[in-house]
Image (cartoon, rainbow, N blue to C red):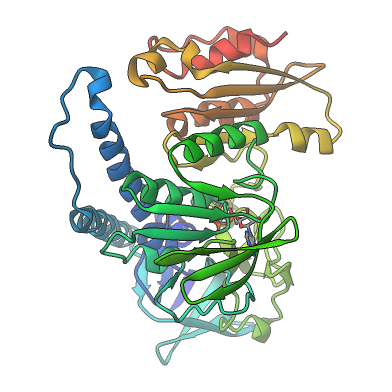
Length: 453
Ligand code: NAI
């Protein structure tokens, strides 16, 4: 049989494409050599957020007396926390399987290789069988980048990536994290909550890369006060067993820990797919695509982390939908200006659109307003002693929202409102006329809009 769409990779891009294509009555085959759900579901977004929720419950329980609730018996069981994480992952992986059935997609649990593109279609080999498809979508995701640091041996059971750390069933006494990006700070948060000594070594002058600088510094301060040691402008030069040696201001410092997490970024997975058999072009290590997610080869599309562009599951969803929409007659293009980023620390840190740095770099004339999260009554009610900030950037001439950045809970649930404003180029005048539910923390967005001068 000839499929309308063959999907290589069953992560967020792949399974959403299969679901949407099924809805549109396309015949679909989806190849996945591991579990459905990809990194996000099996060793990324979902397991980490499940663990971080346990940490949040524990943090809240430890401080519950601030809310008039006794906490005499607060304790935790790391094995039970890990077991719950496994249960959540299993349930959701099962859910993706059910969605594939609903979409009538043929799930092939094998590694797929593109073999040729002929007049009859694209040929794919998997598990010794030949499959034929009209169109192919490549969504093989990304893997942890291991930098060439002397002594950093990924085979050692001391050195972990996001994958191995999720399989730890014991709490390490101490953890050194190489790279203070999203993965690094989320695991720093988890292990700090449960009492491990955490040290973060970050090469740049700030944690969390492109996130708003002021709010990143506030979050850094919060974690340092909780005992996380954070070294900025620090370059790891060597690893010797349990010891990490880093250079800062020309001086070498050594930190020792039971485990070492490497979280210095991820790289697209493009090897072993037979891309060379079809002449699929790469760009900066990822598969090169246009705004419709088309590669340079007709009928071959790519979506998700494999494009190396925006390594986020929610970007992957939308990119996959762009592919399916174009295949089924709805003209659609991928836009990146309103994709939210969330760091699930406690407090959560969320942002969308321009930061001050990116707006300045783009030569945009903008105004800025900011308010403490505590300006929202609900925030005070639920965050005893909590601090945080909401920052809004608007265009100086038309007052359109350019960027929104929030540090505070539950900003991960609020930021989509700002994404809608940015995507639709809503102005502060239009937003001022919107009614927000009261009392909610979301009102901070409205209040900050009113404070733009
Ligand atoms: P990242 O790019 O967020 O951060 C890596 C950090 O490591 C950077 O700050 C970089 O300066 C630093 N670094 C690089 N080499 C270094 C070295 N030799 N020594 C010290 N520091 C060094 O990458 P991360 O945290 O590995 O995450 C990978 C991807 O996964 C990201 O693109 C992120 O978007 C995604 N992700 C998203 C999450 C979310 O949306 N909440 C959660 C986890 C991951």
